[in-house]
Amino acid sequence: MNFKKVLSSAMVLTLAGSLLAACSNNNGNNNAASPDTGASPGASASAPANNAPQEFRFTLASEPPSLDPALMTDAQSSIVASGLFDGLTRLNSAGEPEPAIATKWDVSEDGKTYTFHLRDDAKWSNGDPVTAQDFEYSWKRALDPATASEYAYMLFYLENGEKFNAGEITDASQVGVKAIDEHTLEAKLISNTPYFVSLVAHYTYAPVNKNAVDGKPAWAAEASTIVSNGPYLLKEWAHGDKLVLEKNPNYYNAANVSFTKATISLVEDESTVFNLFETDKIDWIGAQAGSVPSDQVPGLVKEGKAEIKEIASTYYYLFNTKEKPFNNAKIRKAFSMAINRQAIIDNVTKANQTPAFGLVPASIAGVDGKGYRELYPDTGFGSENVEEAKKLLAEGLKEEGMTAIPATTLLYNTSEGHKAIAEAIVDMWRQNLGVEMKLSNQEWGTFLETRDAGQFNVARAGWGADFNHAINFTYDLIHPKSLNNDGKYENAEVGKLLDEAVVAADEKTRIDLIAKAEKIAMQDDTAVLPIYYYTTVTMKKDGFEDVVSDYAGHLDWAFGKKTK
Image 1 (spheres, rainbow, N blue to C red):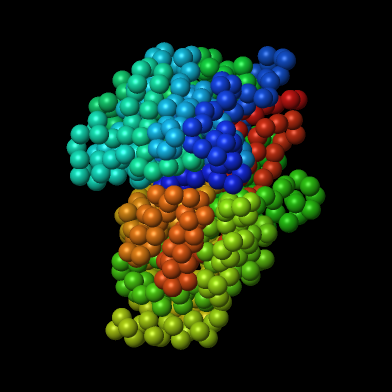
Image 2 (image 1 turned 60 degrees about the horizontal axis):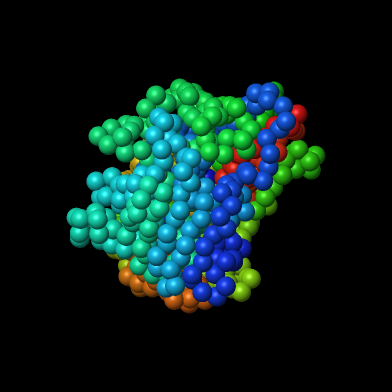
């Protein structure tokens, strides 16, 4: 997921820890059913005994670009949407799937057909019942090329999903999703996909109400027109100022929703956010919901007022690989080798991040109880060597018939933190390569549009896990067909390996294929310039419980509560 950082994926897999949760009832075969508990995230925590109003207040750095599940791509939007929409399942803060609109599911012997059994007490905010037909409509809408969903590839697991999205077939009834009746949904997949119950927790799989959506392209742009089915209702959207959500009294799990109100202020400046916290005007900072100023972090952590948590997210720079000079792999590698990642962490970000040379963070699961990076270290993917960088730059320029890097700009979304990192890196390139580069910043929504359109030379980026699997950091970011591959990096062998990974018969084979693809993209091609694996710095007011940064570094707040 695009981090504002990010910070959304094609292929969601929650193995190891979270895949175990998804498949714990398989007993070695694929004829499994989930426990029919009717539970959902937050169900284990009871609401406080008193009925006093509870408000939770936090900030986002900018306006959510979209609250339409088919069109969302970023952490800002997803944090809001987590309060507004419920899918078949939800991921808890550890990244494990739990029942939501689906109370249980059955899996065929070959692992290619999932039958979801939906609760009968879920309602839309307009009073309509939530049905299996809503899910069928929504999944096909996300795949419809007319919708132009950047995350459409998340549904390529469905039979004929990719063909329908590509326009190779036009009959939507051939897509592998079907409402058997109002409360039974069948999904037919192209391959055995044991992590599918985690995948359907992603917002691209969330249902929308056909009556509210059809013929109304701006349905999710105002509080007065949005129709949702989650624990909260969007009561106010003062564009550029704030969003106000209120508890949904008709939510099926309303007994476990403690906040009666959530106020989300739109504040870009990090110092202002910190002052709001210090003056008791907000209750939380961090995990994509505001940032603690970098110069304050060491002192606040030492005093016990802030916490640092490693998260499954990567901070990197994109190269526009379709235009000179960054179409040349030697030039890209030279720019990567000419920066000092640890110096950036020690002197700029100051939050104990880990230098990155690959795409996949250390906290992402591998196989056999080991982490992906434990099995496939990124240490061989690159190095920091100024002399070698100069040599590669000269060779790359010669190959392109150039004598120097032309006028070039580094684009970042407006943030004091991103600005400081950009200034440090541009200074390193100036000193180590003799390259001058201009800086340009844009507001988040405009930045995303510019980057998506390929109107940049070098641009900052970040990616946070949509689910706990390495394919979420590879297929999404370096597959030629992925619309989140904003640098337009293209290597046919990488694409082939990732396609094979999606349909691999076993997890070890899948992970090996992913690792081969990542190695080619990063060690050979320097597809992007990784800088560090994220941590998140969080601050929370006393008296709030079950409000946390999740495993991917996103604020998990919808089922929190205030105890004093």
